[in-house]
Image (cartoon, rainbow, N blue to C red; front, side):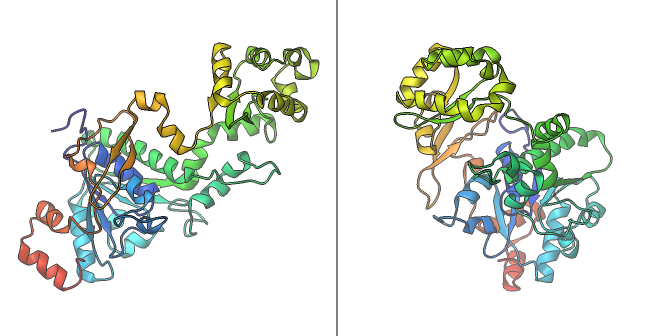
Length: 392
């Protein structure tokens, strides 16, 4: 039965996606109690092979597939494709992130699935969407960051546009896909038909950047820095981030760093002027901050109500007292895996060690159980599918 811990208990999801943008949407469904059936090729989701691999898993796989059940099919095999279609007909949700048209050739495109399963919620995640001149182009997180303008707001010191250093477009797309699907699931009991959700990295990245897109239109071009001299500064022993949201914060910052005269200078009188004269202002702030350690400055800034934070690495973040106090991270392990720092899904009830949501699937490791549970197959039928190569 659905509960706060498992609001999607009883929901069955067929996850045909690989990588991050589709799989992380599926992971969220699994962590909220859905039975997510992950379909993989013999070699597994390609995300399993990127980066260091331990116990058959990579960081991408571990962060995107927890709580699912895996079945490996040969989709070049006619019986493998037929089996996939049978599974799709039994699921409430289908998630796929092939290039547009591929699922149609596999016999599990939206129109084919809805014929057997009229109320299916079908999520297609792609680079550019299901129509338009770019629909068939290959895409990736980097392509989406470039295309959306995300790189233009993340330039290095020489002004060169850069990616964020993290798969931002992929994860943002996964979150928008989950949000759209959650809304559709709320409406589904009251609808007579399902829905095809067309979620693209292009649109999701742009939605994430909506403020910057509107801002550039209002400014008539690239916007100046909004809260100068906010930024990253070196301290005696590391880095600190300082920001401002009100004009009064600049005076508080200047007093805290022992440079009150800066607040009285006409060229730094407001945000617009400070942005225009940032090349002169920032070095003076930086020079002052080199006089103390990060922790010393944090004590000063917090006492003065200046907005600041240490710039953590991931290891130091795990050790931060606030992270520990909030129990944000759980140390988890699985078969053949070392301890994994699992950041708990915000707002979700964290699964216990014996909960199926707490395990990571091996490639095809749940095939027999899936076919018994979903299609009611017996061992002889499952063995025959293995013998003919449809089931790997």
